[in-house]
Length: 222
Image (cartoon, rainbow, N blue to C red; front, side, top):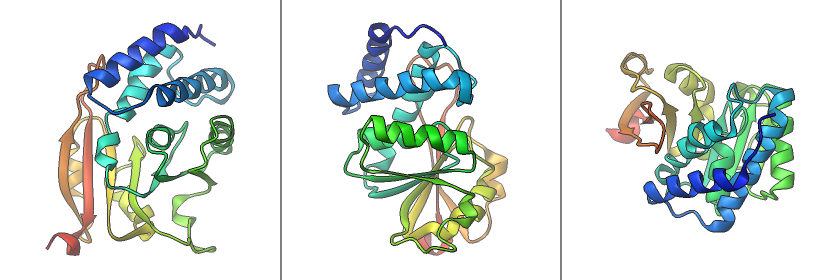
């Protein structure tokens, strides 16, 4: 486990939030650091992320996910598919306590970690599911479908849509967090769906491309 210099990490996080002009309170920034500390602690055993340096985790995980938060401005009930260590789900839940955030992953170690984060950070707006997204809401119907379904580096767009489309409410949309703008993936999107937007993200201190891909049902955009 790498040394966790909370003061230095807090400064980089605060600077990044300021650069992106995000509205994240001091208390929320402390929660984000608490989450990072848990990830750093569990990572050696649970392999939540290939990154081992907490400073890299701030830029590549926290700031990267924070850059996407404004895109969820109108969302009320969000599903993070293939949530892994909780990105962007935990970050969304911390920054938007008014929004319900469900996270799903097939790997028990990862969902055990997410449940620990929910408990320790007292994130009452979080639900965690351990199963394939294809099975969610099938045997036991959900009381409420999702107005936004998101994922970060989870799967090809067409697979993402096919596996989780049954969980999106009418008028809802997908927001996929991607690296480079995936032209070939967009072309393979099934006919029932339509890419409605592509947004480049500028993540402070991260020298890599980041994009959001927005997808809606074709009949919504006609």
